[in-house]
Amino acid sequence: MVTFLAGGTGTPKLLDGATRVWSPSEISVVANTGDDIELGGHLVCPDIDTVLFAGGGILDRDRWWGIDGDTTATHEELRQLGSEMGIDPEPRYLDADAQTAGRPIARWRRFSAVGEFMEIGDRDRAVHLTRTGLIDEGDTLTEATRSLADAFGLDIDLLPMSDDPVATLVHTADGETIHFQEFWVARRGDPTVAAVEFRGADTAKPTDAVSESLADPVVIGPSNPVTSIGPMLALPGFERALRETPVVAVSPFVGDEVFSGPAADLMAGTGRDPSTAGVAEAYPFADAFVLDDDDPTDLDRHVERTDTRIDDGDDAERVARACERTLAAVDLTAADIADGGEGPR
Image 1 (cartoon, rainbow, N blue to C red):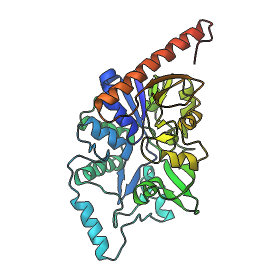
Image 2 (image 1 turned 90 degrees about the vertical axis):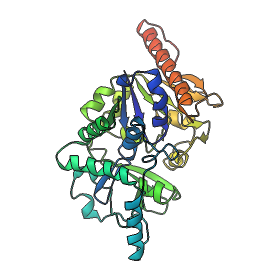
Image 3 (image 1 turned 60 degrees about the horizontal axis):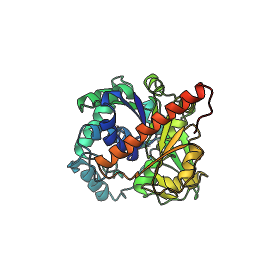
Image 4 (image 1 turned 135 degrees about the vertical axis):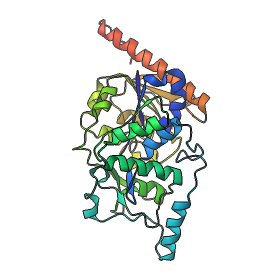
């Protein structure tokens, strides 16, 4: 059994290869929910849905977002109505009282559908409406996710990190506090990051299913350490569990060059070096790392090297096999230490 921690694109790409290395029935995926928002009354879970749609064979792999070939008639009509009313198509964050009213899972991340700043496809919207309806009927997010995973024929076990609300909020250098989706989707990562807050994490908790999955060896794919993995680490007990199990991390950097996304700006904005060295500092619990052949970073832990760029399933398999070798090396090291030897790290 092996557990993957998943953000938006890095780990889902890696899963294309992981299912060639491990049996899908042996794989659990813990998905970040800090990026979730309630948009026009329906709960959108981007990181859960990327894994859901990829596993179901319908993901738009050009964007790594939404359903391939989806139409956007409802989204376009919302934008058109807003335009006719003289409303700019920008995020409309509901007022403070609304943020803690209604379904608890959506706290601190409620947006109006007026103008709809995030493009939601028509089939994609049906998933969000179904999820929200199941939660309104009494399901937890975990139960709703399991029902959707069954509907899409997933063989892996897809788990939200928590059934409690956690909102990833970006504090900008201009003194604003905005949700991560506004920062990344609406403003294209333009504001200068001063800090990142995981609101609600101190009172949220990992689900029982997540806690059980963390007893297995863990692979952290090349996901954003701040906004993909950070919300999980902010949950009480999550990092402690990682310290007690073998953990291998794949760096999303080659030295100080990031493969994609806002990881570099977010790491710099939160006081970490935007590099593989900064990732290692952010993951003190990781026993080993998979680094790119061209990464010049020297670490004080076990390192396996390969070409870590993932453009297709064969690339993903190559990196997944490097993770498998690294987990085996970590297990051998642990056995050596148990026998009284120091063993390499």
